[in-house]
Each structure stands twice: as structure tokens, then as C-alpha cells.
Length: 320
Ligand code: FAD
Image (tube, rainbow, N blue to C red; front, side, top):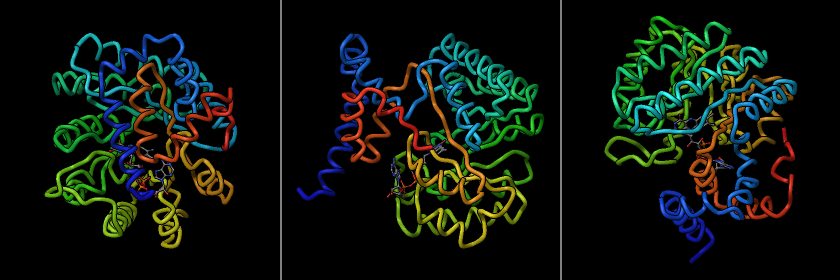
């Protein structure tokens, strides 16, 4: 097995460990393991509470970054849990507003009801958009598996008609996205453009490739030329450099957003060059799966995670 094959294999192993419920509950009940792994996860999540997230948001804001905050969770099938998640998001919007951090709220609709009932998710989204609007803040809807895209776009369009502070994440990897853009372009709100994190069938999506990068840049150009507020959400230097060369980054409508703990060096250099930059900061007790995914998508991070477990505070050393 060469180095590349080894990384792919490690990535698959991590994803299947992450999905294994027995391992997860053993890990959660272990007094030794849980704090050790949480220490390493803190490179990628602000902590387990909204207080920790808001405090990190204030630190990042003081350094000149925009921030979006997300209470981690998705695919919740229990109505009471969805209600609790919605209440956590409402509290977060209030705390963010009162702290004056100006952070946006990121949310996956399957965390607040989409998996149970579309109208439940809609009601929760509207409540959240209303609360965020009271504090001059915005809500960014995440992109999920392609089976949910239709419903997510529908809820975005309905909510944004009443609340222009609601934005939507679109995935360049999906073949449908250019058409979706034409359908939604008359609605308000920021567009966050990502490549897409979900493994999708080849009939409806294209994998990581030059073709995907070209498509990403083509979509970005279309969105910008229609005067849309656009978030370039990528850690890919090829995308960032091409966006810079094509003059996208100079637009006052454009910001570059990266996940907390990933390519902070690149984001910092963009910020220092005067471009608008944003950090996506997640928090919550469901950080385990999120952490495993960060390691799986870039297996060299496994070494760093091991070092973080045994070197107190190394995960907290900020590159920002
Ligand atoms: P890739 O093509 O995956 O990687 C290109 C290069 O970027 C790599 O070779 C490497 O050099 C660098 N790189 C990428 N990842 C890492 C890493 N972890 N560590 C170090 N270097 C790395 N996806 C969704 O499906 N739905 C969402 O709602 C969503 N929201 C997102 C919000 C934000 C703010 C961001 C930044 C991403 C979001 N994503 C979302 C994830 C996104 O779809 C991609 O899966 C993820 O960003 C990786 O793709 P990429 O463009 O960064 O580069």
C-alpha cells in the first residue's frame, strides 16, 4: 500500500468508527477517553457550550474575522430533541446579539425538524430568523444530502421572502446547482458556495477534480455578476488563488469562510491582505462525529490529534 492508499484506507476506517454506535457509547461513558479526545477535538470545535462558542467568536472578531456559529447536530428524528435544538439556537442568537459579536448562525434544517416534518422545520427556521433579525444577525442554512436538497431550497425560498437575513449553502458538486441558482436568484440572502461534503452518486454529482474547480468558479462568477452576497467556503488554495486572480475577492460582496481549525494560516494571510474572512465555529456535545469527519477528510490530522491529546493546550494554540 502506498502513502495515498494508506490515507484513503485510514479515512474509510475513521468514518466507519465514527458511525459505530457501540464504539461511540463506550467512548462517551469512558472517564479516561472522553476528556482526552475532547481535548484534541477542541482544535476544531469551540467547546460543548454556547458560552465557549460566543467567547471564541469574540476573540476572533477582535482579530478582524467575521464569524458564523453552529450548534452541532443533524438528522434528529425525535420531536422533543428538535424543539430543544431550536431553543438552543434561539438562545445562541440572543447571546450572540447581546455580546455584540455580530456572528451569523449556521443551521442544518435536519437538526431542527426536517427529518420529521417539513413544516416543523419551517416554523423553527422562521422563529430563528426572526430572533436573529432582532439582533441584526443572519442565519445560514447548511447543505445536506442531495435527497434533501429540494426541501431545503423550498424552505429557504419561503423563509427568505419574509426574512432577508436567511442565506443558503449550495454545493458545486451537484449537477443540479446551476439550475437551482436560477430558481433562487430572485430571493434575498447570502449564498455560501461549497464543493459538497456528501458522497453522492456519479449520475448526479462530480467528484473532486479540475472540472469541479472550474464549475465552482463558474458558479461563483454567475452569482457575483448578479450582485449577490457570496461566501467562498473552501480551504482549497487553487480555488482561493483563482478567485483572487479573477478579481472575485476584491468585491465588497465576497467573503472567504473556512472551518475553525482548518487552514487558519491561509485565512490569516487573506485577512492580512485586506480581504473579508470568516471562521465557521461549531460547538455542542455532539462534537464526536464532526471531529472524526475532520480527521477523515485529511488523515495527516490524525497525527496532530494524537499530539493534541498528550500536549495540554496545544489544540488551543491559535493560528488566527
Ligand atoms: P477539497 O477539494 O476537499 O480539498 C482541496 C485541498 O484543500 C486539499 O488538497 C487540501 O490542500 C486543502 N484541504 C481541504 N480540507 C482540508 C483539511 N481538512 N485540512 C487541511 N487542508 C485541507 N459541505 C456541505 O456539504 N454542506 C455544508 O453546509 C457545508 N458547509 C460548509 C461551511 C464552510 C464554512 C466550509 C468551509 C465548508 C463547508 N462544507 C459543507 C464542506 C465542503 O463542502 C467541503 O467538503 C470542504 O470544505 C472541503 O472542500 P474544500 O473546498 O475545502 O477542498
